Amino acid sequence: MTKLSVNINKIATLRNARGGNVPDVIEAAKKIESFGAQGITVHPRPDERHIRYNDVRELKPVIKTEFNIEGKPIQDFMNLVLAVKPEQVTLVPDAENAITSNAGWDTLKNGLYLKEVIADFKSHGIRTSIFVDPDKKMVEGAAETGTDRIELYTEKFAVDYGKGDKNAAKTYAECAKLAHELGLGINAGHDLSLENIAFFHKEVPYLDEVSIGHALISEALYLGLEKTIHQYLKLLK
Ligand SMILES: CC(=O)[C@@H](O)[C@H](O)COP(=O)(O)O
Ligand SMILES: NCC(=O)COP(=O)(O)O
Image (cartoon, rainbow, N blue to C red; front, side, top):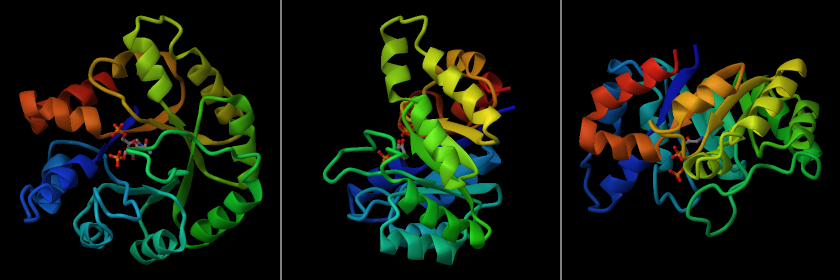
């Protein structure tokens, strides 16, 4: 079974549009868990335009499943994660001024840096994951850092699948097999949706977890959160 971790950044983005506390991200996280999701993901960015650092602190005592914090390991982010101690931290090389995550790490160029950061998180008992493009060299570089897992960046898959490419998941499946051989756990995320998740799940082996936000919260506008989450859970069995 592949676990579903729901990224609640979009709920915070909606709240931030008005400056009050509607919708309430804490209540949303509780509901999402009660509907069966096996994890909550947040991605605090330095400008806090989506989820805020304080949301992350307030979510910790509320979350009963797995808490996954994603982000670029700048000092403020490191301090936050080490104070909150989630089950998992996912390192993402957020580019300046990008609307959302737009690339995985170059694990060869940044290998030594990632190794140090990962050792720090692991020494505090936090499972680590590194966001990577579906590139075998990047998977090999990730394994060298000592990380527990990788997260495969699935935007390219989503685009190719949307164009009808039957081989859209091929490189992802190859990278997952290699990662498994190298002893790494495998997560995946970005632009996964009710439309493409069944195909990805069928084609890519050893998938431990997917984190899904943008499409899932959008689909919930039509279907409701409970029904949307149940549909994902069915497709991830
Ligand atoms: C790491 C990743 O793939 C992102 O999808 C991200 O976590 C989404 O964050 P935003 O909702 O802030 O774009
Ligand atoms: N790690 C990916 C994630 O958390 C959600 O990405 P998206 O579904 O919002 O594109």
